[in-house]
Image 1: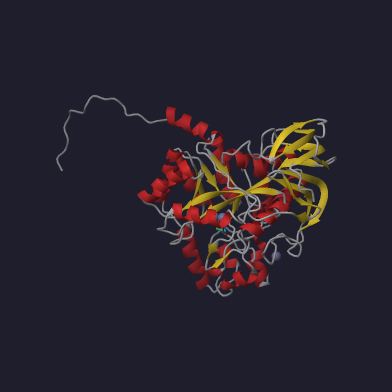
Image 2: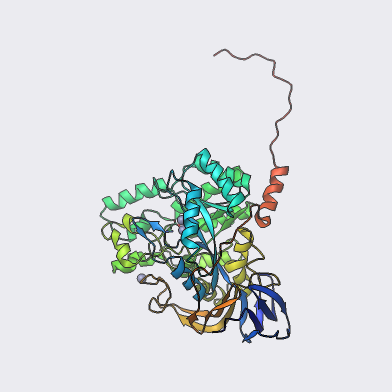
Length: 496
Ligand code: URP
Ligand code: ZN
Ligand code: ZN
Ligand code: ZN
């Protein structure tokens, strides 16, 4: 495999989120130098023929949890294996979550995540920060993270009672601070109190298997929290990003809010777009448990198609995976009690193919919308566009040569992830990455990876993303409530 830092991609159809055109792409030293027809081959350049193929921006997975310590164990895809698998699937950047324990410093969590990830990542990455408790110190640290550490997004949990969950007054405070510092508030929208009550009820009824996981947190538990988060965010004029939108009900809440003019973005994930929650009722416990994640996949089998329709028409905005993988022996921590099954599924390797198959091959969206929802919208919302998410002069050379006609069958036997099952097992997808270029280097070709841990870089993100904050700032200027000027009331006041 050539190690050339000069690459000319010839004759492919360059697809951005707004247009497609047959063009060559010249890459040098990690950057796209030129895009245009019939470019001359510069000396020493490796030429890659992309005729009849698409040349797209590398995928950006907005939501991963590599090697997360969670529910008594640790996710098996670490930053090395997880980012390698990402590259094999055509994803060239991930956004992971630094999650401090309640009462612990956000800055300390940031340092820990950076020192874990930096030496291991094979592709570029960035971090969202979780806010799992509230204090003046947390408020100050959010500002430091935004001003000095390249963080512009903070995730608040409305679920995981007593672990990560915030109450409404804390959400109000955290969202207010996000607005002040120019960050995007993200929410895990499920009602944690109702889940806790529902889980007790299921267990008392003798329902201990994975189906109990869905039964104790049905769609309305997600939809209620989604509506509540949107209401709180609107109250303080804070932009909101709803992570892992898993149900039709929650997606409708997001869509309606957008139609009401709210600055809110919804993120469906590969799992929710590619499969459903009927698996929780499978007779094979290990199979059923492998789909356990929060919020759950929904047993209504029309859910994935519905979420894809909303993604296609911009009711939902962007896609991640929530890749948080636990092998069967780890899932088995909950073999007698579904509340102890570590929550999380795979997706980082298969997201691009699953979305192509269910979104583009099905005719729901075109190739440009595919690029919008797999990379450019993420780069715009989280403020690193057009550095990434676009094939253009001066953008980072994170590029995928995509064959829309080729098919591949997803299987745990052939995937590059560490987890010992795949929730998309057996799915045949049109849309295959044939070459992945990360930071200007061919890192995946002919089914072979050529990567080194530590080759990826942390991407610093500035606050006040134009894509999000132009509207928010203008509303702040013109929408401030003002007091009515009146003469003082001079009449009688009753004595109490
Ligand atoms: O099941 C999930 N989603 N696991 C990861 C943690 C989270 O809530 O995103
Ligand atoms: Zn979550
Ligand atoms: Zn099944
Ligand atoms: Zn997550």
